[in-house]
Image (cartoon, rainbow, N blue to C red; front, side, top):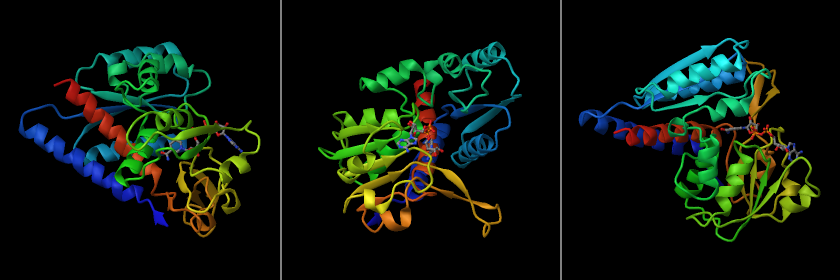
Length: 291
Ligand code: NAD
């Protein structure tokens, strides 16, 4: 069994990005600049945004954080986005989700300039990804693809079960893995909360990617010997032995499933760090296009 070290792989990617930034700077090219929009004061969202900003420092990107009160109107937020769309110094930006219920998420994501949409959530980028045209790929599925690539795990012809159909993880990774690309070409089943006989589907799968956010949902009895397991889930569970009072766990019962898996990603240290690395890579690509 091999534990896929997403932390190490993401550090390799950050080093590659950092090197390119140095080379760009030496040649007088622009420094990549990533901006983030944060609405309200949701704890996990603040943590995610802070780690993205911190990662920018590691690779010498410029970063900007635009924070707004949770009572900002949708119109005002769209005006602010328009300013960022027109700011030539900013190469790419993200709108940290979720947004407050008073704001229509679709309207906001549609107002992001597709050329700066480094999260890949604008319908133009999402559509391009779906039909296999070069575009910004959402960072988490992009990170999963990169893990397969760097670990030389080919899914060619393999039965792959994706659990969870969110627009940001489950659906895009199911689309990407079924495409005729290197390391992909999988036969994909997309399961969700209305799926019947999930246990049976899981047991029949060569690869399982779980993105549902239910702590240790995937048990060893649901996994066949030698399966490849990618755990996207991030849940906080009470842990009195930790200073914070909680610990982070994935969707997979790692202790027992790892005994049967051929490859498995841990939580933390698997898919999570890859997400940030791929966001930065998308930003570098956006910056190159402005050269
Ligand atoms: P979501 O929370 O929007 O939706 C959950 C999905 O799981 C839904 O499609 C639902 O149908 C499905 N689901 C829920 N219970 C199920 C069950 N019992 N059986 C089958 N399907 C079920 O999804 P999301 O935003 O993709 O987040 C999923 C998890 O991934 C969360 O824990 C989130 O924190 C984590 N996440 C991690 C990263 C990362 O970088 N590692 C990135 C994004 C999300």
